[in-house]
Figure (tube, rainbow, N blue to C red):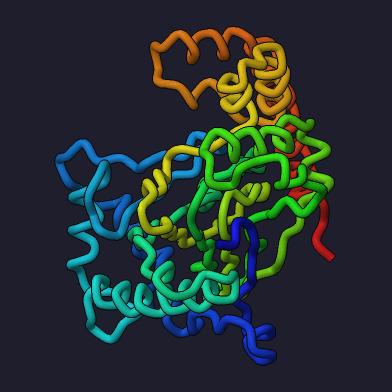
Length: 335
């Protein structure tokens, strides 16, 4: 059984025998930006809110409509999609889902998964929206992490135009010969060997790609990756789907294997504090990986308070400078 690998599904690679991406016209028809805007604007008297990936505060919605944003997603799916000739959004997403699964399975075969192992436990596609429209805030890059120990995952561009893909770590890895790839503990130790490096070292070995609508990055196993920094005034829509291998636990989309949380598991307390501080200085909130009110939440937050305050002061100063520059630019005579 293969353990680790990644493939791209792009139009260019499909011409040379690679995985064919989802047709861009289906992405256009699904009209994801308008759908998520509708979900957020529905005037429903409920307690719906987005799921949240704490690593970079990226909210997501499940298309099956259950969970935390239940009634808003369900209601929007039953409305007419203005980009689909009078069809409901549910039909548009059903078409997208079929092609997404086809692309996903084709990529799994290229990664070496075949026969009975192709009977993957499919999860429903998640819609991830980052870079709120109109916001002047830069969304920081996520911390490098692993999502999955034993499974396949897909990151597909559902934006109207090209985007930067998820960044994949492509540097040196510890030899697998020293670990049992079937052991949860060993795989976590293997990940920890890399994730305990400084953020700058991980970043220096990161690789990303430009994805057109419908193109995707698909990877197998606990590949280290992270969402890129999202510039101000930029909106980015991604589809994310996973499938676990037969007989193993399904992926939990709001949980990640991160440097500071793995440090705690490995009982490397000082390293946990160093890493929490390093990623706080990048705008992340490491303490949110633990429930509010828990001892770990409080302890990690206390560790990094000074670094968090310094980060916020720098961000405020930068925003003030940016606004002052814009004000000067507006006063300049137009040529």
